[in-house]
Length: 374
Image (cartoon, rainbow, N blue to C red; front, side, top):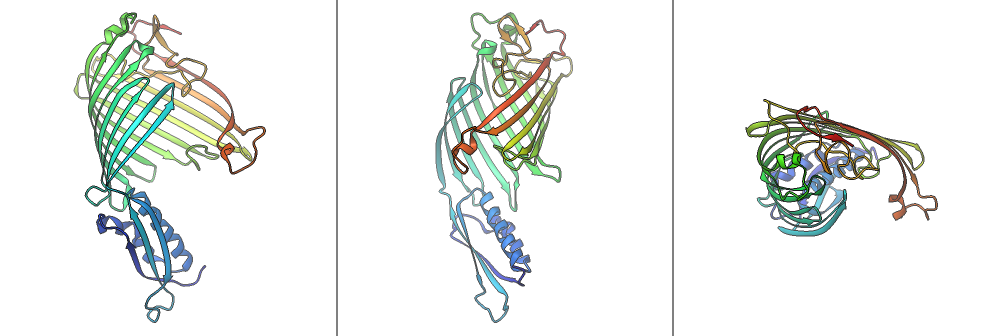
């Protein structure tokens, strides 16, 4: 494995719509290999880089001795055989979670201009999200797929029965994602027109006060540090997400909002995982503008604090949840294998016994709100 090696050629075959300059940054490190082990490592890294572009269905790799063996006795040629995705692809699916079910339809233009650009159109219907449209343009940076720009437009209508109204939104957003030594950053701007409408006959007075239009223009920064060994069922590592949002660059919504999420997992015994989590946030109104129900925090439900109905914790008026300006929640979880699972390597590996302990609370910092706690 430590035999000297020199890479004479790196070839990519099978592409015709993709521009060469988007491919070279991901494979050029293969030429730096000095041993056969380094060659294998860098070749697999290059293969992953090509797949990460999101424009290929398949990437196969062939390492062979150099065609001109007399020049370099230890020379090798590396060939990547790729299969491009079709220009137009579509998808359908269903999504169930957080007490809601959705039907999803989408289509995508892949590699539109030959540099891994994508145009995506999505449509969804659900039990609460009555209708949602989104059109987005995605452009990665050559050689750094983690660095990308996204421009999107969206429109949706959502039923919020816990607050006795519907919410209609439509707007534009721009996102720029980039990596750092700390984690993955996302800097975004959002301009959204919102309407609280469709009030129920028994809606409380506090909800009726929120009815009408609002225009939000906000800058947001998010950083994610993900050190988990598996996104779905981590056995070790931690996940940290910190977001700050400033609204007030136009429109009539003005606030400063912070939110923190942290989870950590540890394998106590084989297949016995202990996990703990914490979330917290703060919403501070600016320039004397009161907070709106669209922007407040809510707690309660299967993906929040179990044992309570969705949005069932915190300030209420009659039967309506009003949300609050600050919250915290914490959880302790123990995952173990099923008592009588048939064996390893099957579906049972993804079905576990779950013991949990949840706690949390909401606090209202806006003293002008009239409410009662539950």
